[in-house]
Amino acid sequence: MRRVKLFAVVEQADNNYSAYIENLEGVYATGKTLTKVKENLLEAIDVFIETCESKGYELPAELQGSFEVDFRMDVRSLLNVYSGIFTKAGLERLTGINQKQLWHYANGKSLPRRAQVLKIENALHQLGNELISIHL
Image: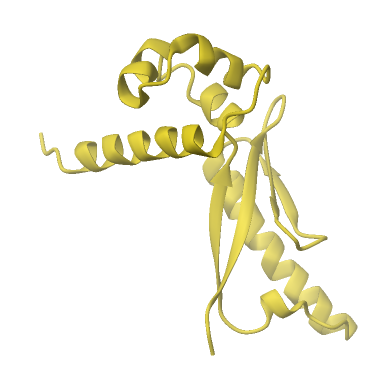
């Protein structure tokens, strides 16, 4: 049996985070931190499965058998969540995207094209790989 990948969207709300599974109604969660919203969403999936089984409802095909959850965040939420860590100038150096354009993305004035999203994602992954290889 193949392993199904579920895509979870994490968004920043006013005072917390929210998450839901794309294309699967009824599974969502909130949390004060990114870690907590992820934990809560995984728990919500378990509760959803248990409820379907106990009530005799048909379980969606995505949840039958083995699955994994891939958490995703939109660019606007990412830029706002980490605004105290990554300055626009720092992100410009990492991504090559100018600060004004990053400001537009962070404030919802424009949506990044897929190529820009990949630039941001790749730059952050590269930074993460560099940081994880450092030992002090």
